[in-house]
Image (cartoon, rainbow, N blue to C red; front, side, top):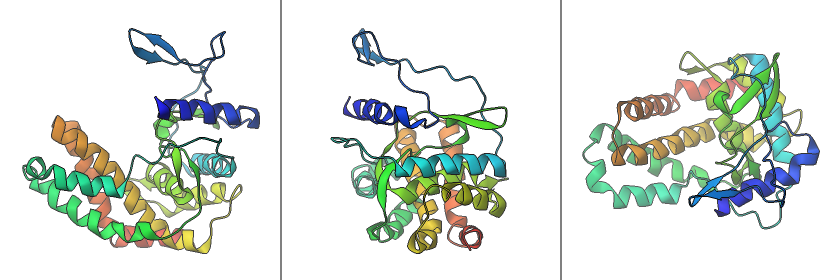
Length: 258
């Protein structure tokens, strides 16, 4: 409930900024939540459009949107934090050892990456509001223009670079590999609103690794509760990406920041 209220409060606070989003529709009493049989229901503005293809121009527009988002003020009392948390990942490894050992193809790689990524997360980077899930299926385009960034369920206060890394996973890859043209377009769009620091640019390949690892954590939690082929394929894909981010794919991303 607190996370949903944070989402409502943030979107309400930026409504006058003309940020391209689908905003909650308030009831006549001013509330945005309706309870039906103990379930919470919210209705958002309908935005006509479609999920975009991943192209340099679309990547640039989404980059500009998350760049603008990073400059907007976080409302007083906002408390939501990232769903990707390294301490929770370590606790997961400790508490779910028996279940994870049933899936050695995932377990050892997840354990190793968790330990390797922890030191990176000690680096102090600029923080602020992030959407944290700006993938193509959470954007709406119409006539080649971004008209809405939707689904703020994962939004939080975190390193601003986290949004760049996560968006890069959605708009910076082509044929299962990072694409320099897409990445440059994304970064150019972002930096029309906020300039990335030299440390952030240097840290971007590791941040992309952390974003992919955080997504793996989310899927792995679901998988050990209810193993499905779809979850298995997604975990395999993410772990392949992470392995390549230890080498050539990291260099591809770094080259696009120069």
